[in-house]
Length: 373
Image (cartoon, rainbow, N blue to C red; front, side):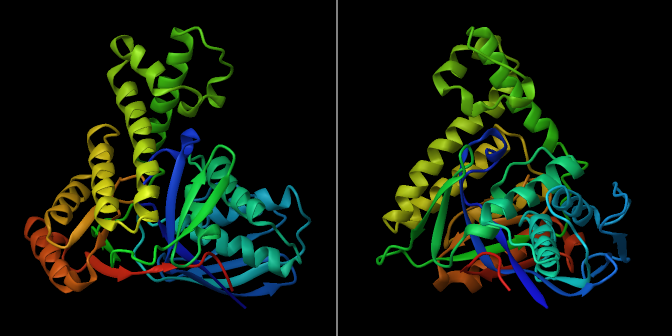
């Protein structure tokens, strides 16, 4: 038995899904493959080509965080069994087609496992349920203050279509390519350093966004409830601006990124509809600059890579993926210049970081359908 889940790229809508923002995305034609068989005794036994060791547990046993790579699957099991009776487990192996970091591999692995566990237990989930269970595995079990961008892209996306999704109500549109689209391809550039959100500043950034929203509500005597239920989507940019002089600087910067990124998303949707990948790429580059300057994400490696990518002829625009704490960069490029682009980026990046030779990698890819068998 087999299930495959694509990785995703989010060209516009960075760092906003956890604040109920609007996002965009593509699934790409590379991802996670999971070959599995059912186990009649409820045992789960998992291996991976990306991680050492065997993950083993019982679907109805006690599940908590362990010092291994299996916590996403434990979390998914725990969330699923709250709603459905599980009798069978799975034995299988994960195979990833690209390096870990910034392409939502954790969501892809979780979705593959959920699909498999549901299949052997004769459980049918809607797309909305699949997205929600995978999201809750990371948010509630792992403890990451994520949104639903990754899971949504990997479930809902369609080849040659651009996903526009409102994370507040989960309404979405799949926008097809324009007949006169500027030719383009995706370039994925792996920095050579794996990403981990668990021990990064990711959760701190989420708290800073929430704090800006809560502070604005309190200052302007707006109705507010629990801090945990507060999001930047609750306020307007004008309301935020009115509090700028008395708000902690970092809170304001994170919130400013949210509102300017929302504007870029809307402009990006129009550029895509018009087939204008030059403008689309310009907005992606601007998004990356905002992620660095306002959101203050990005390791030294990713900042160097981001700069090199956007200085390279034939690149419409690029930025780093995921939380920006190591991992990958995305570029949208002119296909006719891709070999020269790859050579230029590789030469300049390894000149700055020669220790990443052998770990650094660069790939081209295309859009793809979401999770399937």
